[in-house]
Image (cartoon, rainbow, N blue to C red; front, side, top):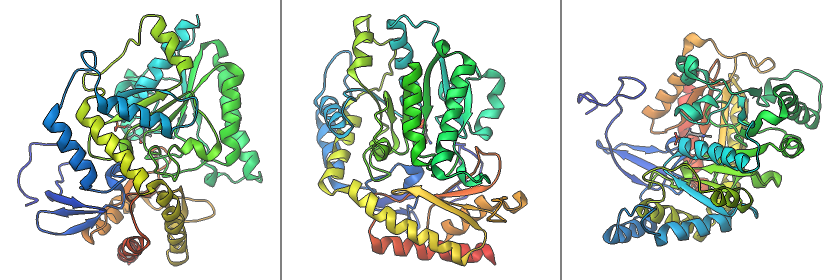
Length: 440
Ligand code: PMP
């Protein structure tokens, strides 16, 4: 089956087996082989596969209307999903703009920030400071903010080179600072950067509250988050949280921002928000930003498929399912179980240098030396090899070169939020088997 020629091309020419169907945390290929979806695809399938409530709600919507252009009609699914989203996000985030994916959600956030600044007479504010490493998307605007070398470097001459600050990769630091001091040190890099750029030119700062593809579930020290909020407020810089990966319950709260009591000015979500049932994303902001933009003539931005009723019906059913089964609470509880299981791997495999994460967004990183966190020899191609060994054994994990794609190997383990303790044990048994094969 895998040797059937394909007209499709993605990262490589190496085709995977044909997918047949999904069941909860499992995916089944056409030969009947079962895989645990240990990364929810790309941290997408938060409520698992083939959820009956979602499918029923989508089918009901299909019988009514699959598309109604948002400038021609309001629809109940989009209104209801917006209301539910606002109810689930912190106070102050009460306006929603739907999109079809993460890059669109990020760019929508940046455009809202800019249009709001214009209504305030801040025409000179246009710089969006982001971080390295980071991942914000593949379209040109989002890529410009992205600190992930392999996807960005080919297009470097076509980028506007927005300013970047170092993300807190604290596990690599060899100073004698306390965690708290380290968090503040990294946050103050933003302050220095704003001053260097000229505060009157800086529009916004964008960050992933927990790093994703570029770092592997990297969490900053607690002190970082509050200090970043203060610095943004000090200079009138808008704070954008890219919660495309972390949002919709993945880290054990609806938004990761809630762990630190932060209310960002704008939040981008996707992935788990449509949970694989629909290409769906959302940009959420407060009336404070949105009303002046609407008063000044409207938001000069939009995508054809934004807010289409079928995608929104799916999204609404996903949030209802999450509430009905307390999946966010389950993500927090199972996240603790998974984290201790992953930490235990460090006793068994000396080449696992670090384990980290929040809720069910967890990762481990390989190192040849735990003290220096020097990566394994790149010639080993460790990230590809372990992914293949796990795949052969029926476990899907997600791997990238770490440190912004420059060196090292990290592996994201981020199963659907419905996972049980028993299923975590099943997943870990396969992972240990794959690691044994890697080690031998
Ligand atoms: N932001 C973050 C934090 C992401 O993880 C991703 C996808 N990996 C994106 C943005 C881009 O999302 P999409 O691929 O849906 O455009």
